[in-house]
Amino acid sequence: MSGGILFGMVGTVMTMTQQLPGYDFFMTLSGAFVVGSLVGLGHGFVLALFSKDRGTPFSESFRHSLTGLLYSLLAVPVAFLVTLWIGFAFYFQMDPTTSRLLGAIIGGWIGLSVLMWTAWETWRALRVILAAWPDFGTAIGVVSVVFLVLVWFFSSFYPYIFQGAYSLRQAIFVSGGIAVLIVGPLATLALVGLRKVIKIQKLIRRLEEGS
Image (cartoon, rainbow, N blue to C red; front, side, top):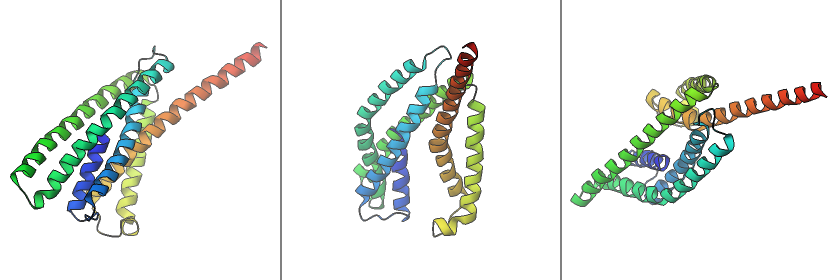
């Protein structure tokens, strides 16, 4: 829900500032929502999968995470309606009316509440991961390095990528999104997979030595 709403709001702002075409705002807003929802689903699934105590079996964590994913799919249509509500209410503030202003205010508070709830749940999950996962520091290090490299890359080569003016603030925003929403889950999966492979290799050696 939060991924779709957040990307939808970014699409709205970029359309209002004429960085995206506004001739078909519904398609722009819908496309941004779909991309944000997919990123959010993947990010939330990885967080839920690995925010477990050390004594919890991986299969049980996977089952609970899959259940949460299915509940999230039921909530996606509601989030889409909220995104349309907020996006169109803010977009048509260029031709304001009382109903549009009221819609922007109510929709904005709904979206902000969802984002704050997601931030709180993410923080809770990270605290569990930090306490139970030995590779947490490594994952944070990978994400931090990628973030810094992307900030340098975007701020140095923006004329060849974005074909226009590009500020350091925009570079930080885009780099942070890529590092946290994409690199973070991928690094988590890779590190957990490596530990599983190492355990399997050790088990194979013990069996070979025993035989």
